[in-house]
Image (cartoon, rainbow, N blue to C red; front, side, top):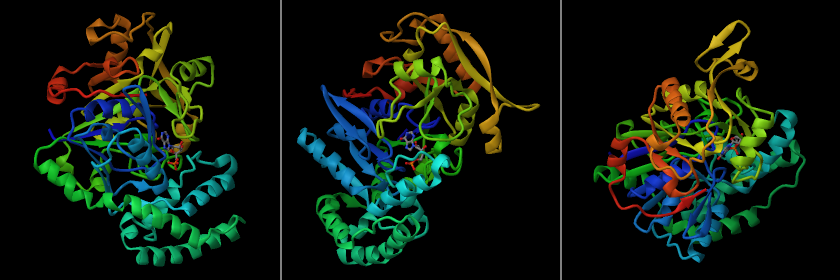
Length: 442
Ligand code: IMP
């Protein structure tokens, strides 16, 4: 089974990094296929912390090829910071490859992202201010600048001159801000080209070749299904295809090459930024989850909105992504609660919805219908197998499986690598018969 996809099933921050790290220990190649430095996780290797936003965490394994594919938008400044940090800490970056077709995040994208959010005021999306939306907008408008343009600075300059005229007009006339200087941007990006030029190739050939050779390729999703540009809670979404189908477009592989799709779901739900969130708890329980689960953004430090597990959105994610299994993360955060709620449906006026309602206003205004399950008081963080978990914990997982109609394959009960219980024995055999390399993702 060479093509394995890991996707977020909620609104991002599900703990995908933990699961991809575990699977990367068994992979030959790890591929990022969408998003940009709006994503992020911290990796701990032998006590040393690495903050990664663009480079797949597989880079910490000496024999794993790491690919930033065409679907990603790259801020070269952030990328170079990550490269430098890795090299300074003794991690080789020789196995990194960057797609020649990936688009660049430019300084005007960041200015326009921030200014656009400011203009929206109360209706703002709550973006990460990393220029992601404007970069994808330029890509779709066919006025984006790609990494391959860095390899021919004459072309790069011509494109930059052309687009900057228009961007500066918007920056000055619409937002009444200072225009950006062409020479400053050009010189910066010229320097970036010197550093990252050597990593730029057509990654779709590389990825397909690896799959042809039956190597294990892990496609690492960023953000989550409900933040998908097409299938998420639009307009409160990011600007890329965060779902499993996004792999095909964002990495240049056909659908038949994806053998296994693992959806990552937190044992409760969180969201950063604006937008509907039916099971949100603006209450003591929400605060409890935030503090116990340390729910603060890796990229922006913003406190995350917290609430109960929502099986309606998970069923939707299971459908949209064709999930083969679910990895449940942070189950230990729920330990100590007397009772735990699971949302089984939504009520809106006289209607009950078991599937995601078709209209955004309904998702905004609906009331969650909860089933209440008995909690567990035991510390589960050192338990190694599903059958060791308290009966109540097993009931919670079993209920999730019943409601979502997808088996749970993995459960994380703590931040360390050893604290992931692999519930699905067949998956364990399929994926983990190789030697485990050791890192820790938080
Ligand atoms: P953008 O991707 O910066 O444009 O932000 C759009 C929406 O996606 C905002 O609600 C962000 O909070 C959310 N978002 C973007 N990246 C992440 C992520 O990695 N985790 C969680 N939410 C994210």
